[in-house]
Length: 115
View 1 (cartoon, rainbow, N blue to C red):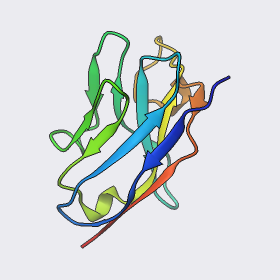
View 2 (cartoon, one colour; view 1 turned 60 degrees about the vertical axis):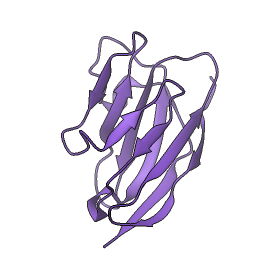
View 3 (cartoon, one colour; view 1 turned 120 degrees about the horizontal axis):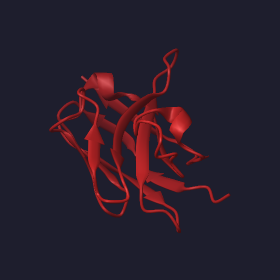
View 4 (cartoon, rainbow, N blue to C red; view 1 turned 30 degrees about the vertical axis):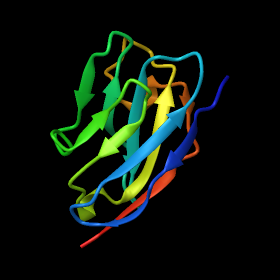
């Protein structure tokens, strides 16, 4: 089982931008998730094998998944603060923003947005 390797993230002020990378071979589709302290892991965005895109309502118009699996995050808000994870190996019988649909996870990267 191949584990994605993540990079990027960091600290920015509200309104700023960050890009998160997800490096893994052998997979086309990817899901991005985030988890804040004390919260459940939630789906943020996904890109399917046919380039179908799905975004959580909270990030629509601000986040974009590229074909290289990176996540471009613009107009960041303090509520976007969380540990972010990419995931691959999706069970296509399950919705794309469900954590349980994915087999292999990156190590996570912290995103902190200050007001």
